[in-house]
Image 1 (tube, rainbow, N blue to C red):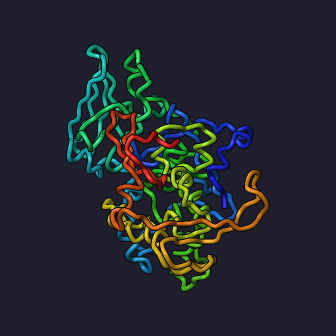
Image 2: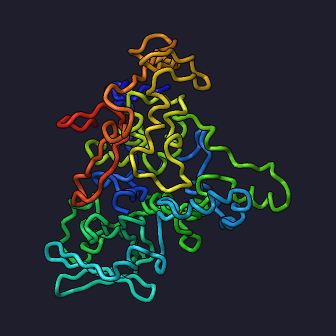
Image 3: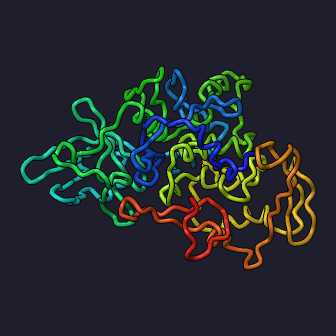
Length: 418
């Protein structure tokens, strides 16, 4: 098990590599992959022996199997997953509920006026300084709530300089782009997106976007489908049609908590990626795998702290904090039974587990360390409301709020733990 606090030690930071600037985030301004300071690394390659791959990195992404084929055996997941934020991470014109509900949006920033319109299943994004105007069609909308648009003009891609935020039911500057001060209408249109960034952006918001390592707009399918996370699902579905069930994709639930954080972190950002890129401050509350790894209770071998212990990626995110009480009490309750691979729990007010200790300088020899998960003396409900505080991003006009996954005793007035 890695101790994330120890990895922050200076001796390790001396060895980090600089990530190449690349992309946008997973999901619209707040879910899209735009990162602080404009540094947007490409998601890490899924070549770790414990990570099943995703089509974002597949060398030859083919057309996906019909979702109805997956639904033959996995009906519940196939029906609910397309309705999740990941299933709708990208939407196309004619199927954009945000702009269908708000067909005319305007915003003025300095000398420039922005207009986004939706009519007859076509979306147009325009900017004007009162003398000159540029209008381009929108082909790709990133995010189903907060939404950013990828624009194409003269063969080049741009991230729209303004985005839609549901908190204000309108437009404001795209998160991370506040530092851009355009001097011309062309510069005001949007932030140029290079090919590496585009591949990462489409790789985390769509399916089938890469063929032989190159973007293929002809094959792009909006949102994340089965094959995107379950590599081999397409072949498995085809085999199942023939009565063969031997080509079952790797079961993601078999990943350790550490492995799952790396897998999800390909788009949601891993601990290593955030540390190496020096992304500090409240803006990194968006990067849940990083924040979770900073938690004192994070144990990369304990399934109770895995991403999927709390979140079913086939279901919409549950917003109410009470839903997660049982997840918290799986560790923080007296008299807990042992989990597989763990020592029996003692009775009383402390739930303790014996976990492997990695031989890291400062920790001593390889052995075991007693990690205690104490019962909360204050309450047994709405745990997350106290221990996972809400964080308002300082950028993007303060319109985006994230739940901090650094689980801790959070006191009013405490500085944000980087």
